[in-house]
Length: 178
Image 1: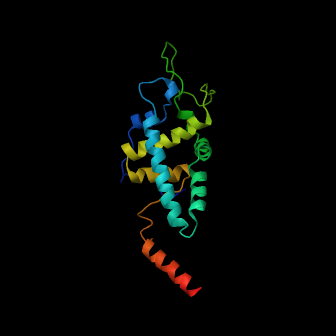
Image 2: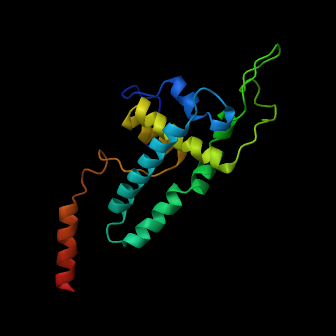
Image 3: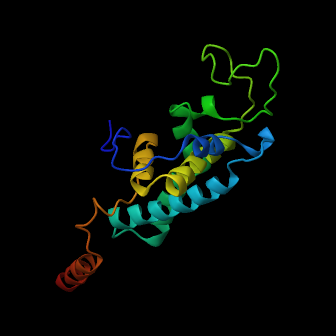
């Protein structure tokens, strides 16, 4: 659907353990959780969103750009995007207890998911996946993830035609001719 395809072999995808970690919330009580990856993903999301908006709307005020950024990086937006991609099906939020009749949490999609998730758990997992793609994958893979999940991001390869000095010169010329 988008311009990126995760089937490409020219970039590195995160290993499965990184993906599982990104989808494991703290209340699961596991040896690891997604909080560090979430912090990295959150920081990258805010940075790339700011760059995208700066270049997309060069004449808009700081207040307007901040408003746009707030909407794009909000937990509500990340929840909606994660929900649309059914990320909740893959989140580990319960303490794993293995017994005689244990089955993988992904064994049967038809069975109801007994995990209790808050909308913030889903939003946090989306950010943690960004962190996993960035730290344990590659920048190109992360851009693919952004595209897949439905977020806009700054891609310097596609935005090479942007020249801030040229844009500033145009603004000055517009002010002089007014």
